[in-house]
Image 1 (cartoon, helix red, strand yellow):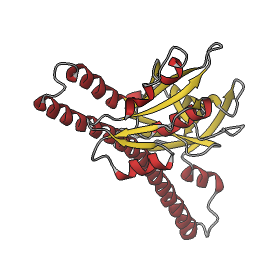
Image 2 (cartoon, one colour):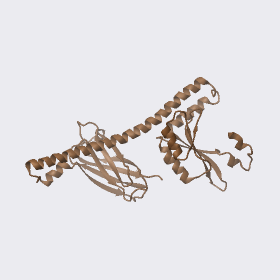
Image 3 (cartoon, rainbow, N blue to C red):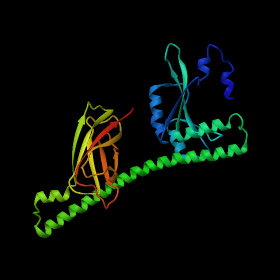
Image 4 (cartoon, rainbow, N blue to C red):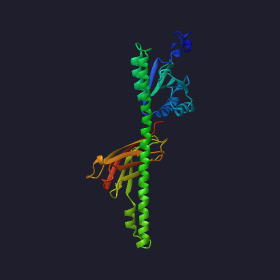
Length: 302
């Protein structure tokens, strides 16, 4: 029985037996973020119990397999409660105490708090209340799934935009080669060829003291002619310790440009470079030629 461990509790072993005298709750946005957070907890604290991943009936087999691959004990919760629990040692002073760390998405947290507020103590056995809480639980789980889907979709859209740009550039290069063959016997003037082929030029300025975990600076993308899509690539030097998160902010743009004309995104899938992508909201109003300067920050949290 679960409560047998308290049978011999005393003033001498109280801190050892009661593992949730101190509690910490970690909230995150996307479901898969829990694995990076869990690794950080495991690297930082001595764990006194195997981490437990509470799931509800019907959760995806893919997620359950991923929990098991990351050495979690998976437990199906009768009331649909979802959370990850760690029990870790901490020693703020001479006394060693045990702390419970709970990891949840913001949707899991919202459902759990409302469930606890409503279900306890007055409606713990009410079938009607329990049924509605189960529906709410499914909606919270669907919201988590949708959050992950939107993140994947945003990444796919960014990659698709880059492929469009690559294809467009390839078509332009083919056109130049055809013109060279038809009219100039392959001796098309280099200056004109570069103007037709090249859409942007990029200048990077690294500021501060870059490290393997933090990198910041500016990236200037000079758009040489009106275009619906423009991309600039920057480098990390030194390379990052792992694939970082990156944020960008527009610092300077042509005077006749309105920020509402552009969808801005930044991505990196490596430790050594990143892309800043500009896309016109409407293909009827392309990005005007000129200088676009961005401030970027890349951070890797171990």
